[in-house]
Length: 406
Ligand code: GLV
Ligand code: MN
Ligand code: MN
Image (spheres, rainbow, N blue to C red):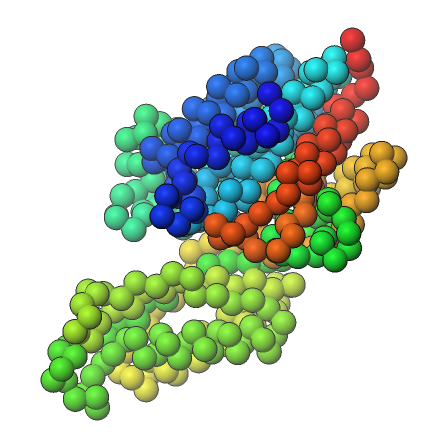
């Protein structure tokens, strides 16, 4: 089945009809549909699908499990996410493997497609949870206790979906079986379009993290409480949003409040509490720390002025990532030999490849995003560019996994 056909099959799963965006949260019905679709598609290619203990799926070319060339990405989404972030890498992996099979390629090395779970951290708030668990970057006890907005823990959600959260934990054996990991991903930003390039290669990932800020005030009557008497947590929160924007602009960083909950949520009441999540990213770790520290101290000042208590907790952190130079050079050579231009780009977006990079040689291929918009239903890549991505990935897998042909 070619790329377009696989894409058409996956496209309707987990799409919200009103927004047109995707709500493929881990361990939900939409997630189960995506997993079932992947397993079917992989089995049609004669791959052997093996779920691991952390909720990730592995589809192996044959029985070999050493020094493997692995490609893949994720199928979960942010709230109302785009179609491409994650799925493009999975569908391209399947299409590239099909292309290799059709041309009679017989790999000298083991080859597999991986689908990582909860990459976005959209449900349990820690991104790249599947790859973090696998590499030991988060301990299983902490992971099991992570809870979603309804208060359901990962342990409960996984069990309800038929998994066994008791088995979560690092997989040294699986990591040892990977010789290299190559993730293809839609570009998130707009660097390739002005360069006239359909594809790019990742240089590294900015350090980034998420911080939860709880502003605790006092609920009161919107129509009677005098302004001077209020302990309104919305006010220091609002000022903190502006301070974050200012700090990011001053330091050449990025800072975003994309999620906020006012409690108890009555339109005619001063809220008792505001809970908000700061996503911050910067070119280096010192700048990231400076940015977050300055947002935090501004927020503490605002809270003191408004009689509001503040607590700040870091929920996730990813240090700076530099992808394997040798692997990137080899891939660049393969692409150049095929006449494919692929400029090297940095990115501020997190990926499972970034987590795995701490343990195995890792590289990323980007497919041009003409508008640069991502984490949005408007995210897009042209079919011709997606197909160019598949061709490039097939060339890369063929080169890395060995030149034998039947
Ligand atoms: C992943 O998409 C991220 O938020 O960086
Ligand atoms: Mn994403
Ligand atoms: Mn992604």
